[in-house]
Image (tube, rainbow, N blue to C red; front, side, top):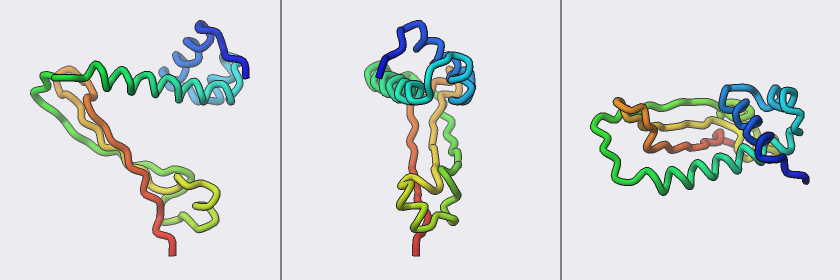
Length: 119
């Protein structure tokens, strides 16, 4: 697969960071969906590596914590054996996040994928 040049990659990531959907980004940039998605994974991994290196000995005084709930494919209570076999991540997803109240820095987060109770 051809890798987009740095200017195009920057344009794609800018669209995603501004809140555009993947399909809208494809339309605006002309980059295929199969190229956009790996680029997002690569950028996420680079950001995680940076955060692991840079976020050391922080002077956070006030931390606010919150949780977000969502679902992948369907809600956990609606996951069937058929859905689970086709999409292992289907079901409820939770994101716990800590935010520095003064700087709005996110020093820590954790996600959990909880699949439905299959009987």
